[in-house]
Every structure is written in structure tokens, then in C-alpha cells.
Amino acid sequence: MFRNNYDNDSVTYSPTGRLFQVEYALEAIKQGSAAVGLVSKSHVVLVALKRNAEELGSYQKKIIKVDDHMGIALAGLAPDARVLSNYLRKQAMSSKMIFNRPLSTSKAVLSIADKAQENTQSYGSRPYGVGLLVAGYDETGAHLYEFQPSGSVLEYFGAAIGARSQAARTYLERNLDIIRESDSVESLIVHGLNALRDTLSQDVELTFKNTSVAVVGKEAEFTTYDDESVQQWLDKLDSVSNARNRGDDDAGDADADADATEAAEGDAEGAGTTESSGDAPATETAPEDRMETDE
Amino acid sequence: MNHNPLQWGRPSNDTYGQYNHNIANASVREADHQSLDSFPKMNTQQPIITGTSVIALKFKDGIIMAADNLGSYGSLLRFNNIERLIKVGSETIVGVSGDISDLQQIERILDELETTEEVYDNDGGHNLRAPHVHEYLSRVLYNRRSKMNPLWNAIIVGGFNDDKTPFLRYIDLLGVTYGSSTLATGFGSHLAIPLLRQLIPYDVDYVKVTEEEARKAVENSMRVLFYRDARAADKYSVVTIKKSEDDPSSYTFTHEKDLRVQNQSWKFAKDIRGYGSKQQ
Image (tube, rainbow over all chains, first blue to last red; front, side, top):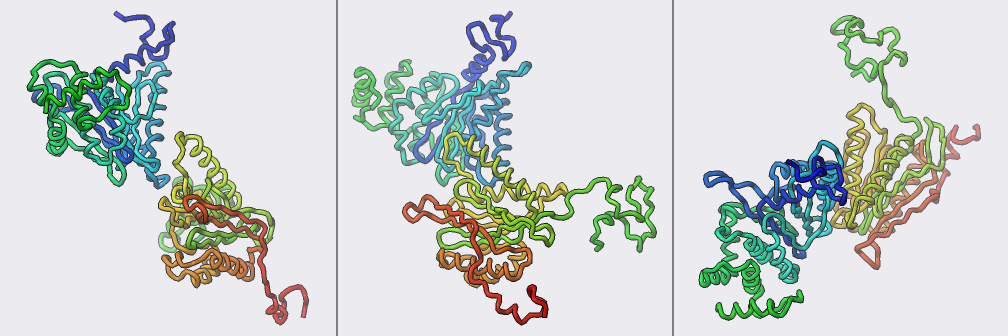
């Protein structure tokens, strides 16, 4: 019945020094649909893919506002995320009430990390089954943190969690320099959507129904775009990088994710821009070649 | 209103006749209502060792605050070495008047606050500034008064806003807060405020005031307070916080101690019968 003897509770180490319950919790994140976050000098963008349990059902909320300057995107058990976001909202309110200042992003994310860590060493509790991307803009600027049920927290310029998120991470890694230097929110969102699109399985497309976008940054309150209001961003996506779509239509094949990624990335950069990320020459030339043939 | 707290919460005898103290086993009988032993619980009713006025004002690039070093036990000038200006963080000053033991409690609270802020500010850059300290103190004082157990103080917090403009704001034992370009607690609000407002008639006028003018107004106010406030001493401290001249993004914080009221004139006293030791 059990996979092994050491995963009955979250407090027992296996002889190899692992906590299986915690590792299972990390697996739960990968079952959830993808969420992507990216940061420029002044803004943070979260984009997420929503899922509906059945055709007639509603879509699961993926982005939750915490305060005017902070919000989260989740992957994994949504009820656990609700508990954590409620806690964050309480923290944000107390900070406003007691100190008359907005809660700092680092403090917020560390406070839920402490809660999560406690669950990994108390008998009879289970770790949270959700990963979060916490986006915030505070007096030290724009921040993006990834929160994990193990209690670990890391700050990122670009991060992706959830199903097939590796593809999005690959996109972000290759476009990091452009993303960091983006001075418009629009380009940041388009890069986010490009990254998110790479996580899609073959028969799924980004639509206004299944896509959530959120922005927070300098002089910009945390704003989420869902349903009709997200269409404006999806339109931008098509106009800027429709080559991939065309490529897909033309080829009509089931290209590997990597190929698609490279095409999209070549588009966004504008033709001929070389990456700084020391890839093998073969992969570097590939997108450019493709671009030229497409055009 | 009857100001004797031991009479509070009772139906007035004039209206309702003699109160029956057996109701709800009320323990204080009319006959011995002054006996504290029979009172179920009582918190601070008055301050014990007290500090008198704190005065403060804004000027163009900063704020200046002063308080004397006296701790009075009633009318006895009991201690002459009480520092009532507390530094919090790198750019905030908290001036406390009222009960000295409560001042020391506030000092401990602020010290703890500063420590936690420093320890949990992981990436740095999230500084505790005057508005935050002020809001926090106002919550502490209001919370205590709501428990009917107030910290018996009036406090002025000085420093800078997030946008680097000078910040000055008051809190007292009731949790009341207000801000102004000229502030004083206690007797100072009667004696010093008019003098300070000669320099800054309207709140926005502080931008026209130089540090030297502000300093002069403070020295003058401390002199008048020493003349007229019997709980004031001529030994005092002054804190000046202003934007640094070479680097406007940082602040210079100067805390001067053991200053004396200068240019005193007691000429008026020689003609007043009973003033001083000489009997006429």
C-alpha cells in the first residue's frame, strides 16, 4: 500500500535524509496548471493558465490580490493557496494598521514560509500542497519570490511553477536580458504570455477564458486581467509574435517544445538579435534561420 | 460630573435614592469608599515621577526638538539627569513627557521594535521611519487606554516622511494624535507654542525657516518655560535632524546634552516681595 516506510508523516526522515511527505507536496505543485512570473526594473507581471474541471464548469482562480501592492499566482491545491493568501492579507492589513506602511514583499513571503516550515516538523500536519509566485512592489522596488511548501523561498527575475513549467523557464532564461531591460509593461506581459504559451499541451491555446494576467509596479496598483479584459493582451501577443502560429500552421507538425520556444523567442527579440546565454551554435542559428524562411 | 472615579458607574443618589450596595455584591460601601483595599482593581490613577514639556518644530531641511532633564516627584525636583529624547533607528526622535517609569517602558518597547526590524529586514532597505514609529506608538498608547490602564505620557515623534519632508506628530495617553509644524506637550503647549508660532504662523511656512532661526526659537522657549513652569529645569537636551549638506539623501542626527538656559534675567525679582530667600 505504501511506497515505503518513511512517508507516513512529514516529520520522519528516510535513512537517506529525505522527507517524503514534503517531496510529495512539491509534486502536488507540478499537478497544477502553470503560472509564470517575471520582473523588469520597475514592474512585476504574473501570468497563469486556468483550468476548468469540466466543459460547463467555471475556471479555477489562479491569481489572488493580497493588497494594492502585492499579489500571488498559485499552482497546486487551490484551497491551500486561499488559506495562505488570507493569511497574507491579514499580515498586509496589520502592517497598514500598526505601522502605517505597506507590507514588504520579503517580509510577506517569509511569514508564509515560516508557516509552511512549521508543517514539515509537526506530527499530524501535512505540508501545504501549493507553490506560490509572490509579486510585490515596495520601497526597495519590484520583487518576485517563489514559495514552496518545504518552506524554502527564493527571489527570481523570472520564475515558473506548475505543469510543464520547464518550457516557460527555458523561455525566460533565454530572454532574461530583454525582460530585465523592458521599460514597458506591455512587452513584459507579452514575454510572460510567450513563456506561458510554451507550457501548453498541443491541443490547447491561450484564450481569454483560460488566461489570467496581473501587473504590479511603480505607480501601478496590483491589477488582474481576466476574461474579456485579458483579450487586449492576447491580441498584442498575436500581433507581436504570430510567426509561431504561422509556423505551426505551415508545418502542421508536432514540433518539440524547444523548437517552438526558439521561434517565439526569435520573434520577440526581433530578427537577428543574438542571445547572451552561451548556447551551442547550432541552437543559436536555428531560430534565425527559421525566421528568415518564415518571412 | 462627579470626578471621583470611585463614584463612577453608580446611579446618582439624588435621583434614585441611596444605592443598595448588596446589589451584585458591590464591595465599596459609601461609608469607606476612599479605602483602596476594598476596591476590586485599580490601575494608574496619576503619574508619579514626571517630566515636563517637550517642544519641537520643523524647519526647512529638518526638525529640532528639546526637553529638559528634570524628573519631578510631585513638586520636588527629584532627578536632574533624565534624558527624555529617545533615538529610534537612524533618523527618528521620540520626545516623551509625563510619567518617567512609563517613559522607560516606552524606551524598552521601542528598543525591541528596533531590534526586530533590524533582524527581520532580510535584504535591507526597509527602514523604520518616523511615521511608522508614530503609528506604532499611537496603537500602543490607545491600546493601553482602552484597557483603562494608560501609559501616562504625551509624546512627540520627529523625523522624516517617505518623501523626505520633515515629519512631526503628537500622541498622548488617550491615543489622541495630531501633527503640526510647531508642537509642544504639557505646559509648553501654553507657553512655548505661541512663541514658536511667531516663527511659523502657518503650517506650510516651515519651509521658510532656517535651522538657526528654529534653534533660536527653541532656546527662547526653553528659557520662558524655565521662568514660568515650576516643574522645568535649566538643563536640557536638543536633538536636530536634518538633511546632510553634502548628501541630501542621508540625514545628520545631532544630540546635544547638558545644555543650559542662557541669558537669564532675574532683575524683575528684586522688587517682588517674597521672591527668593531675602525677607523684606
